[in-house]
Image 1 (cartoon, protein in one colour):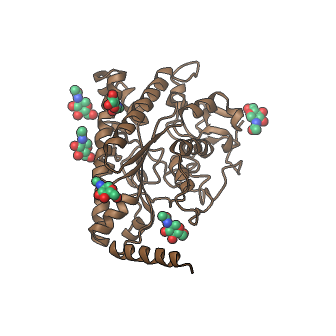
Image 2 (cartoon, helix red, strand yellow; image 1 turned 120 degrees about the horizontal axis):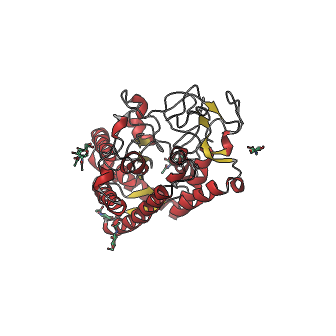
Image 3 (tube, helix red, strand yellow; image 1 turned 45 degrees about the horizontal axis):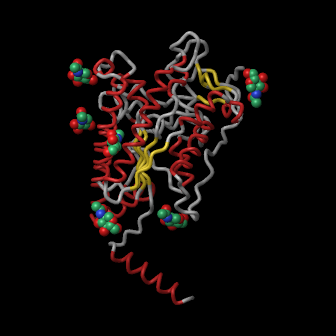
Length: 373
Ligand SMILES: *[C@@H]1O[C@H](CO)[C@@H](O)[C@H](O)[C@H]1NC(C)=O
Ligand SMILES: *[C@@H]1O[C@H](CO)[C@@H](O)[C@H](O)[C@H]1NC(C)=O
Ligand SMILES: *[C@@H]1O[C@H](CO)[C@@H](O)[C@H](O)[C@H]1NC(C)=O
Ligand SMILES: *[C@@H]1O[C@H](CO)[C@@H](O)[C@H](O)[C@H]1NC(C)=O
Ligand SMILES: *[C@@H]1O[C@H](CO)[C@@H](O)[C@H](O)[C@H]1NC(C)=O
Ligand SMILES: *[C@@H]1O[C@H](CO)[C@@H](O)[C@H](O)[C@H]1NC(C)=O
């Protein structure tokens, strides 16, 4: 062994000992909505936003519903895999333990959640972003009790953080007259209100130890099937798309500002608006075949709010941009994740820690029940 190698090992060993023996892994903590939920809402018995029934999860693992609002993986599943990080379990997963948290992190994302507390009120039960941050504080306490304050601080500072919310603040709040935000604000004022709130939330996360954060922007949410059915022509809702763009622009600035202001932080913003917009306009260019209707739908009675067991599935799920009325398919999520990783400029954190190929069942034309078209 070369002397410098021995020296390095010695230094690493001494440093390791000095840090209360925190041989911590790098893990992720995920804050989000249904686009990132991996099962929290399944355990919220009164939530009206759930993905507990077939055909959710049909292209993931054993094919049974797992709480993801997709046929396969979420965008955060895929970006995490690409960085070589383990997939964090849902906060409400009954088997969650301190050891699991130290190995895998935690996912607090909850369907129906928004940046704002008042968003998604009619889903009754969900974790808003503020609530998710409170739950994260609880997680910190558990880990401090388990490994001590210093080691815990190191663990939480080294972790990666994903913050991915915003679409419900528009779709299930501002754009719906039953919510008073829709008449209290104009477009610009509402985006400003979201930015002030998000600024507070990111600052709280930083004060709790978060250093490496990524913030996901919004896609062309005026083109989700649920928005298209609002017009007789089935076109994308321009106003909704303009709101998504102005949210993205403001969030990008906010993230730049905060990244400079918050000590030792690295906060990155990424959206896949343009590439998804192009995918929706030219699906065939990307190997897709349908970009305006859900793969899982309840026949002509649309919009059925969720995909249900009586729904009919498209023949080839990998060729549909949308899985249900709201959510992209596994294959669209892969495209989105690739774009985000490109924007973040991320490489794998750990090449020796390759993730298992996912999803276990590839999202190709499988034996779909009752295929149509
Ligand atoms: C708006 O709605 C929220 C509940 O979502 C309520 O707490 C608040 O008082 C309402 N504000 C006004 C001005 O009606
Ligand atoms: C949002 O809800 C949390 C509880 O989850 C509460 O602590 C906080 O004060 C609320 N914030 C606002 C701005 O309403
Ligand atoms: C970011 O900072 C610039 C310059 O200080 C300011 O003009 C802008 O409003 C800030 N944007 C956000 C979203 O905070
Ligand atoms: C920032 O990083 C430096 C070097 O690692 C460290 O000494 C300092 O305490 C950090 N400051 C904060 C606020 O985390
Ligand atoms: C795409 O859809 C058209 C009609 O909807 C069909 O004829 C064609 O075979 C499909 N192509 C693929 C690759 O699935
Ligand atoms: C990298 O991978 C190795 C081997 O799988 C593992 O022991 C180590 O904890 C990983 N490091 C990080 C930062 O995840």
